[in-house]
Every structure is written in C-alpha cells, then in structure tokens.
Length: 551
Image (cartoon, rainbow, N blue to C red; front, side):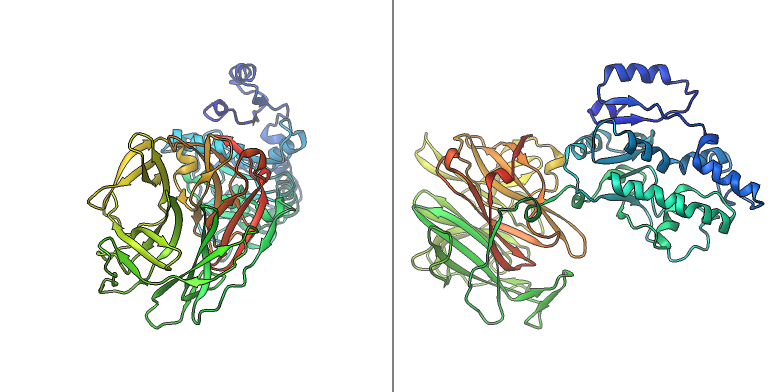
C-alpha cells in the first residue's frame, strides 16, 4: 500500500485462494494505478514445479538445500521464489500500463526501509525518470562468486532478490535463461535452489550479465546507479555541435575546465590548466615527484561565435590591501594556485570565486573571492573566505550577485548547500554566514553540487544554471542537471532530467551560456566541458533538448 499510494503503476500477483482479495479489490477501485493481475498460479501450476516433477519422474533426485531455514525455506516457498521470472514475463506480455521498463518488488519491501518516507520519495522519483533503453539492474550484498562449491547447499547473497528493474527485452531474456539453464542445474546438483543462488549461478557460468550494484536488505536495495536514468545529450540530440579550441601549449600542463561570462558586451572565458594527466581508469600521472597539483589560468576573449580571439595567462594575486599575495608554507604541499575559477559580474566589475589550498591560511582547501582584472591580467582584492563550519575542503560555491534596490548596492550571495538549499553572504570578518534556507527534495538535491554560474533564463522570472553530482565507478561518473531559480528569492523552482554530455565518465562543466536576450530569441545552450580534467570542448544544443519539470 505504501508504494501504491505513491501513484506508481503497480501490478499485484496473488494466488487462487488469496483471502485478502476483497481488500485488494477495494484498492483497485480507489487507485487507478493499481491492478490485480488475472494470472493466478498455485505453486503446482508453475513451470519451476513442473521441471522438478519431470526430474523426479526421470529418476533424478531433487532435494532442498542442506543449510536452509527449515520452517521458511520449504519446497513451496522456493518454487514461488524461482517463479519471479515467470510472473514478470506475464507482466511484460500484458503490459497493462504500456511501459518499456518493469521492476519486481517483493510485497514486504517497505518493511526493510529504515528511512521509509525518504526512500518512498526516491521510488516515486525513480518511477518518473526516463530509464536507459537497455537496462537490467540487480542489487546485491556480496562480490561475484569465484566458484560454485556451495551453490546448492547454502544461501549466497550475491543478489538480494527483493527488487530488480529492467527493460522488457532484457527481462524476457532473463526468463529465457531460466528455461535454458534451470533443468541443467537440477540435473547437476539434484537440488531446488534459492532463487538468488540460481541467479549467481547464471552469472558465474557466463549465461547472464546484469548490472550489479551494491545494495542490502535496507533502503539501499532500491538505490540504483544514476547510470540507469541519466540520458546522453550526444545520443538524444542530433543537432548537438562540438568544437575544440586551439589552446596554446604550456609545457607540462593541460587545458581543462573553463568558466564563461558575458560582461558589458564582451564574451570572457577563463580556462584552467593542470599539471597532471588523468587516465580513463581515473588514475593520475604527475609531472613532479611530489604528486603536487599545479594550476595555471588562461584568460580568453571570445568573438560573437564564442570562439577565442586571444589567449593570455593570468598573473599575480593581490590582496585587499593591494599587496601581492604569497603562497602559504604548509607542511604538506597538495595544490598550488587557483582551482575551478568561476567568473561573475558584480556591477561594473568582473569577479571570481575559486578553490585554493596553496593560499589557504589553514591546511585545508578554502574558497577565495576577488576581482578578475581582464586588462592587467591579474587577480585583485583577493580574500580567503571562512566557511560556516570548519570543513576539510570547500569547493563548488555558486555566486549569485544581486542588486539591492533599497541600498542601491550590489550584493554577493553564494549557494553553499543544495539540500537544504542554503544561501549566504560574506561578512566583514571574511566569514560566509548563511542567511536564507529553503527546503528542497533530498531525493533530487542531496548529492547535488554547484557547477556553473546562473544567468537569465529569458522569461523574466528565472535564472538558469547547471549543477552536477557524481558516483564512484572506475572511473567516477559525473551527472548533470539544469535548475531554474526564482530570480528574486533564488529558490529552486524547476529542474531538467539528469543527463551526461558524451560518456559516463569524468565530465566536468563550470561554463555555460544562454543565447538571446529574451525567451523568444533564446535558442541555444552552450556548455564548456572537460573530459578527465583535460580535452576541453564547447558543446551547443537547442534549449528544447532539456525541458524542465516543476519541483
């Protein structure tokens, strides 16, 4: 009932003499998303049972696992557990909700959740997501089996059993693998296995290869990877244009992430150069023996087609007093220079915010703000900002400049967190103080981090910008999403579907442009992305590629 109440399309399979059928019929009349399936099976009607009987009639013994719970793991129970493939195949055949994807859930699944309301909201969001066309995902607790020594005697939790999801074609193939290999299993091991053991057997012999993700018999059992619902901008958008700039060579450094700003009729771009090479598996090759990240920044002015007309390296940093800043002498050198500069306008000034370890007064990465002098090619009025709490690393703050009509002054607001959504301003003592909070859907925003600065969406009501989150794979996978903020309060109002640009890998984007001065003329988004912290490209797509939905 917990899941039915979410509005998720739901098919319920019950046996022929289910005493709860009158109650379920009431649900069916109350909830248009709920259906009792006509396919009724007693365990003696199942294909699994008939295979066992066939073996016995041919003189092949079929027993139950030795190390089982004798009260729970009865013959009838194990037959039903192995009949999931038969039932989901029927659901695909009937397809009463006309869907391309299907998920199996055991009836007791919500009793496993420790954070029930949060996980139910996640399930609702997952049901609304556009899953990848080819999908087959199974959660599990254990690594892949190395051998099949105890496959027929004790339970193996390579797979959890309670939940799985896939597209119709791959789930039908799952059923076909049952028909193909289950009789051979019975004949070889003389045992009716737990369903999760048979799935592990299929995987181990190479007959079946689902996407496995780590889950347990708790909330994590439904926490599928974003790989399943992140769409590829490159695959779905045939009009996407990609352009690589002819960046100048700096010996030992590679161009990467770039931040864009349209300021007083000029197109400005800052590109970060780094001193390491990241391999596709996520490992780093440094050009120094200390594994030190060295950062350099190159300023470019772009023409009206957003292609560079100049490349000039940025120079020294000057503090608010006007004195040139020198790096802090830390015990351990981790990073030098400014990382991930984001440019933004504050009245007539070009401002920047960046992460720095080398200039931080403590041995932790901190944010620096200042003026980005595009004429003198230096950083001025630089100030290290103390975060609201004493953290190990600060990054990805999003600047939100705003003109105050009461004081007739520009104010620098910054997004500090996304769930809850926290906004702060830098006080006279150099500390960011949180002054506004909005509750946001944790299912969507709990892992979100800032990416680009925000600019006018063109409808007079919203600002638009890009955010991201990541998951640990090999290499790490980055996912992106556009967000619309209320232009007056900055409260998040709408978001796009989750997507990636080209591949499920390390794709970072801190630069974005919106063409046009009003919504009617806004036709294109332009993104500046880096691949593996190098290989930067400019990607342009129509705004219609990324529609929004209300949060």
